[in-house]
Length: 277
Image (cartoon, rainbow, N blue to C red):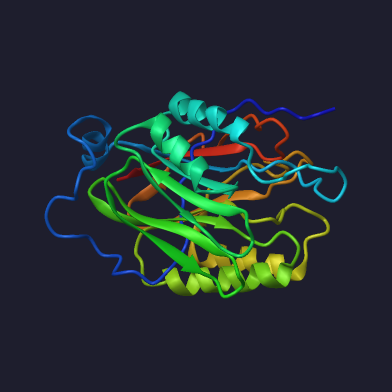
């Protein structure tokens, strides 16, 4: 019997590359649109962040013609979820191509901006935001997988956000990817790292490399907490996490809410609300 979780999650992203400095920029941060939400966020309003692997469950080797990449049919549900929860920053995994990102940007409208990270895996991460934006960047991990990042403003302060999607088949590659992210983000003061990390910290079969990943992440960042046994995927595993750090950056309680999976998908949307005190 399928487990359907009807909660609501607020999430912020972070992924890595070596960009500028993590310090505050002098003067007023740029606004993407006149008035409205951008002004509210610049003045210190709460920010909602969502991470969602919108790919379909992997059955490519079992069903002829099955595609596990995100389906175009899932995109209206993504846009509806963004509107429903008032999400300000979106991290997505397993997009098929840039036309899916273009569709979401067109449907969501101004002041939304976004970028997709192409790599050799063929299932791409993307980051979309309506927050005041300094710019996008790509994080190369040296494993063939590229993650999408952005520098945004929350409460007038620079925050680096990264869309993470770690390797699903190799714990060794996951560890290498996280080590590169940690190295690239080390100099930044405020960071949100969100995405599909492809390990379950509560699993009795947790690999030693994944335990190292978890320990290294929690040494450097704070994890948005959840009860033991909290699941974000079809098989009752917790694969999707949000980590963050930075002076005054806090996640509001309740920490996490889940939104239902897309048709054929195996991940719930995770949404987290942040504020800069």
